[in-house]
Image: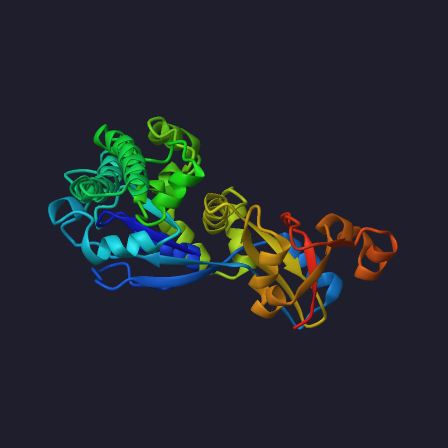
Length: 364
């Protein structure tokens, strides 16, 4: 899974990237190359399971973040979202918009002054305009190719035209496409376009230290015009969280307590929101060699989940032994879980739940 971080110049997007990935990308100068980092998803269940099984290694689920460069003049003053920049965004699974809401004389704001609402609107409408261009081109192509189509092909073209015309109207009205009620047929059509305002979106408001404690007020103010189900808004003090991310766990905890900061770090909050935006859950595998969390989309079958571990398991799948995290925590061993009838035998169509421990029986 890849999440792309984007924002206007001087928004602090690279600072946010460093905070969430514990990276050290340069933040003081323009860089025309993307920064790519992997963030490990914190999960207290892995700690408990590792205590039970004492494995050689513990492996957390991971999310890949890409800090995408933007021209120093900003998108609106160059060519907007197009070309390779657009192609990169289209390949992503979700987007993070970093919006500046901090004052710092040494970091000049992109506009005349710091205006988070204006910056958010600028970035939002860039996404909308990019989608409008894509949808408009497709409509023009369908209209020009309708002549000479056979009956079934004409019906399909007319359905797509009607569907895309509705999307175009929403985009022309300045709305994204998050709230449209898509049918399975619609989603199949959309898969070829990779529209930006269909993707899950996280708006990160990069606040200064002086606004720590006012997060809910700021979030409510900026999100009141964005009721879309796939838009999430959160405040993070990027500079502070980047500095904290470079500390060890004990130092970070002591510093947070000394300043009465939220116990949940900006890093953890960002990862939790990213997981939610992507509709992800984790299932676990356990053993003396390894305890590991595997990210899957909600609604994934045992067969498809086994393929995340290894393709041979999916190809030769026989059945899965499954136990809930809470049951294994109480039983402490798989053997006790089996004796109590809590380690269940499930077939290939079983839908895996969050936190379940799964052992796959297979034959290749």
